[in-house]
Length: 219
Image 1 (spheres, rainbow, N blue to C red):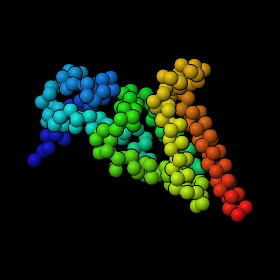
Image 2: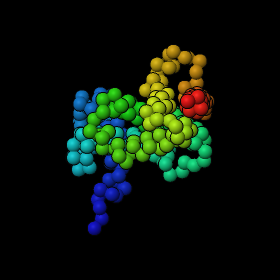
Image 3: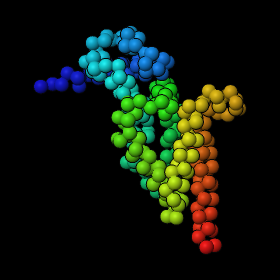
Image 4: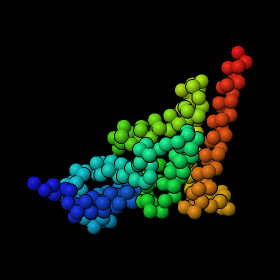
């Protein structure tokens, strides 16, 4: 028997609902947004929401999953190879590329920002299969660069600092444009932004490793 939820028309309806819901949730937030606004913008009806997602909260969860899974970061773990320094550069470049990719939904950054600031059950639902694998990959790269003498706390702090530099471009692009009007903050500046973050981060990691090795020799 054909799964009617899996035909082309049904998939297109889902796509329209997720796109429209992403826009409305980004503009109004989860609780203020209404299904009527979403279905009007999607050109569908509430029955379509009930059929595909059951309710507004499940639709929001689908929007969060889409925001976190689209882009090159979705394939991060499968094809990362080479020395840890090269993998860190590739990781940072992918994150920054996704942030400035004009082909990705413009509401994506706002939705992710909302979830980072005030996590909902939707974020919990994608932790295991989307967020945690990426985090393990990042921690492993930083651990390799710092070496075996680094504590888990130092590895975590360094990883958080690297990720925070990238996320600032996701959440603070408009602030950055006002503070640094001379900076190139669009897709054309991706490589320079990524290279700067990578150079800055690698310098800190190498300095930390030298300090760890020096401390051991002086004992």
